[in-house]
Amino acid sequence: KGINSEDLEVREKCWEELRKAAVDWGVMHLVNHGIPEELTGRVKAAGEGFFGQPIEEKEKYANDQAAGNVQGYGSKLANNASGQLEWEDYFFHCIFPEDKTDLSIWPKTPSDYIAATREYAKQLRALATKVLAVLSLGLGLEEGRLEKEVGGMEELLLQMKINYYPKCPQPELALGVEAHTDVSALTFILHNMVPGLQLFYQGKWVTAKCVPNSIIMHVGDTVEILSNGEYKSILHRGVVNREKVRVSWAVFCEPPKDKILLQPLPETVPEAEPPRFPPRTFAQHIKHKLF
Image (tube, rainbow, N blue to C red; front, side):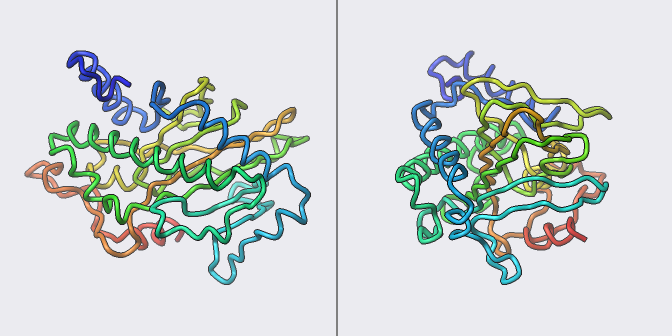
């Protein structure tokens, strides 16, 4: 709530903490974020309800990656680059702007899934605007600048991926998701309070604490590029748990694939130095990372 507090001192302290976390870690716990606990509780209950159904119900929503259809339900059990198994079920779909969503592939059960997710998407989108404003000011730019550079209300896509990590009898042989940085502008994550997020910080893996009623926020590659590396997109991974099922709700705020050229903003590049990142569209950036 400090982010737009009437009290200048409170507001500036909050802004400074957010900026500092983005520069140093690139990931943080947002508390008092203004999204009601009742709503995040509904989102979690709906997601857990979906994954609690029999496999044949979930399969009705199966995606078809081969046909380029990534939205829907999927399951991943595959060896990753380091020879460990990646072990997760997931559900992936676009949740904002409303005109870019396809409700036909959203789960019909639990019955609250659509209503809860829609409302959460709206409120999260407003939170993204506030965060981007503070990050803009932290770079000495006008507050609407970063939001504009990532596509604004019309073009910034919010893609939700619910990750369901089953209990794993031998967690040392599996990872929920292998080490990566997010390609997004920002990523917001809810979770079911089972630890498992690890961050690669100053040369070692650090396990994130679980803070009640917080939303974890990552700075993604897109904002790292625009800020010429001032804000960090941190390497992270998900580990699985022997005793408990772990569920997380990640929302990736992504710029349009081809409409915008991502490159360091001229104001962020010191005079005598070249920019730290070459110009690429978002689609080109993803391709570059994959290969």
